[in-house]
Length: 561
Image (cartoon, rainbow, N blue to C red):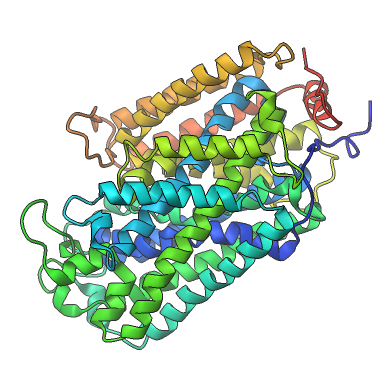
């Protein structure tokens, strides 16, 4: 058998045509999307100026998770990496679960970005979005389908051309928020930071602050740093460029988001905050919505600029409200196709999803991303209604990364790691705790929906694998912790204090039996227990290397039995 350092998984049919800037902007364009257009508004509405605390906590959490992905991506630079790392570390049972969540979060993001375009676009084309119902209209639904079709068409470009298109879009996407920060900083109203009764408004608790981190779209806004991992099979010199790209992208995104929240609060028209602070800036469920409030709901930053008398900036921001979500949706359509490709490399999806065209594009997987992305348009007719589900699916995907890193450090300690996360003995289990904490904060309403999605995923992938004679064996021993982990997180969420939000008339409720603060201690303790249990039963080194070796050559991949 080849040595550890020379045995690496490889991809078939893809072309390495993306450099450091392209890789950085692949992650950055996913970070700076619709989250910057709406995150500051929903966070301020939820907890007032304390939203700044949320952005800092969220940024620190995501930074730790990004450090983990930087090591994994440099170590094994393969397409759809987040779906493949747990497969190598723990085998197919764990790989199926986390791989499906990786695909689920990717396929659902493009519709979210389309909803953002419709919501901002309704300022000029009123028939796209209904502010009172917070839903896209029938026309908006049709236009969303057309927009997703455009995403798909552009993705058929060769990666070197696609990267150029994305680079141009992303330079704009970074420049416009920076411009907004600079201009709005000159419309400073210090009193806004105590609107509603103080920096932490009256009635706002720490429970509300933690709930706002996933619920207000803060974690969702930070999502996307892992895109360089998803496209790793197409990055030049990935061992050097991929870790740098991830760290650059998350650093730029964190600074921009925190400063955007500062100027959103400071530049808001104080007259709108006079009665109830930021929590009052919302349209009533029934009846007339004040024009100024309606403008803020439909396009927060553009409305702030317009109310501050900066009409030119408002126009630019409404233009960017198309470009920013467009760039993010475009990139997630790309990554969804690569995750589907990766799942086919694992032999969870049919092998036809590995098929690439002459440009190196996994075109069948790309078409599947478009078709199934449309499914998410039906039950989730607004930006905010999809964010909680996607955030939790993403964080469940992220939860697999520290587990994989911990396993790889024990299985192949001598493997080449261009970037080694410092203090991995502490930071890897801490990253797992952080991921589970965000899932818990999302609330029970979101968690039980994820459970339904997972069951559907098991059924679909089970059918796919049943017809594959070369499917990998099911590694039950190395995944014995998985059902305890999933059911345990569900039980803690059910008995905990975070319910989440839902527009459904009937939804299961959490009981609140575990007192606040104690509930988070329970999540942390349970996470540490699961982490070390997973480390104890990880795949043996030889089995892990067989899985890696099975994906290191050319097709057809040998099955591992």
